[in-house]
Image (cartoon, rainbow, N blue to C red; front, side, top):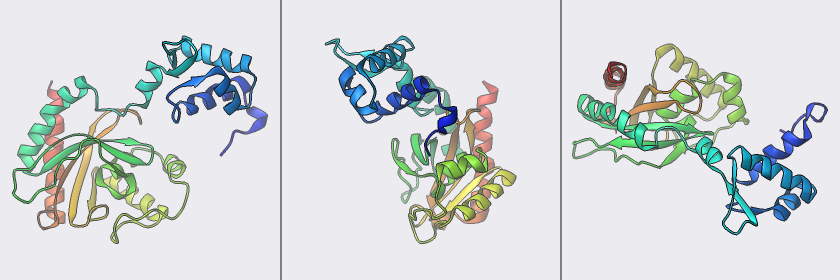
Amino acid sequence: MGPTRDYTIESLDTGLRLIQLFLAHDRLTVSEAASLLSVGRSTAHRVLSTLEGRGFAVRDSSGRGYAAGPELVRLGLPAGFDAAARQRLGTVLDDAALRTGETVQSVALVGDRIVVTDGRESPHPVRVAPEPGRTRPAHATAGGRLLLAALTDDQVCALLPGEELPGCAPAGLRTRSALLAELALVRSRGYAVSRGECVPGLHAVAVPLAGSSRRDRLALVASAPADRGGDPALARRAGELRRSVALLDAD
């Protein structure tokens, strides 16, 4: 959806579109930015200089091009990946793995997908392998549903504008309406589950881990093969995960 032209601030719109260009280009010259934005070189130069002054762009060593600056990189980095967060949350992951006996992972929401930020592996011979850096559709996973449930329905609809949802497995939710109903259940219950909806044979439960805003929220997920992931086991693990999360408040 494009901006409503009657209320558009042209310079702000140009700056935002330029920031979007850095998502697809490692480096931009003034001429390239002007061409891609359909603006004059002087306008492109002023906007790039403004972004540079705020740390959203940096000049490369040649002085002829710009790249994404530290502020833009920081805003694009999901919560949970930096060393301080991994150290602080590592105790929770260690405790959760001991309490549940299953593989546990922390996940963040990036757009309409979740990304695994860290994890601990179950000691069981048959187990789920932790997958740091792996992404999956948020609507089809326990961790994704937990994080989506922290948003409003309007925000969820903006992330998933179509009624039909892409399926990961035959058991998955197929419509946005069904997802919104599931998210209402997550909010009332306080935890989210998935039962083979993204990976057949994998059952998971998720509880809130950390963060108060959309960008820094994390979910704590315990995953197990289906034969160890029935509804009573998932509910019990939700309580165990919460007890592990409580360690953060004790620090």
